[in-house]
Image (cartoon, rainbow, N blue to C red; front, side):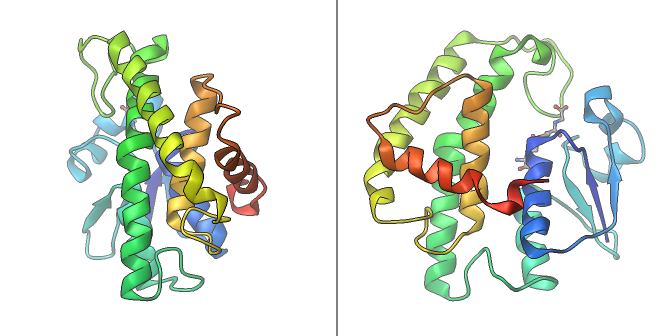
Length: 211
Ligand SMILES: N[C@@H](CCC(=O)N[C@@H](CS)C(=O)NCC(=O)O)C(=O)O
């Protein structure tokens, strides 16, 4: 198998963090998505969504989506230590938190960044080059959504070291990506949400994020 990735891509970093946590390496090939290499062959036929990361299996199956790649790698190759949970209850609980964080935080922030920075003019949607306009309302909505998410999780974090309890999980990798997106947007976590700040600080000390 081979992982197609780009060092500076936040979603690619999620797979790199996963591998670092597992202390594993797999064959990789860099695709420079800033220079549009993903739109050239053979990459564009391999992944019509024109994004990284994606994993090519030995039978040529392509798995894109960073979390799906991590899930496959854990289930097929690197089961321990688990990041997705080892019981049906924990798998559902971790998946629930990961989806909440992605849908209510990471995706809205990603859209906010792509609608704000001049770097993303003509590339507002990942994997496209076109004249879709940047919209300030999407930036504003991203900030509103992250404020709401942080307000909703702060009390839960009072009794939980990581988002799913004592155990570091894939949902914490998504949480870390949320905090890095907040930095890019220069959004500061309100001081009234001390448990969210403590979670961020705990995550920032984990070795696996040094990739
Ligand atoms: N939901 C996908 C998102 C993939 C994605 O947005 N990748 C970005 C890099 S972080 C990309 O390839 N962008 C190419 C572009 O902007 O044209 C995942 O989690 O893997």
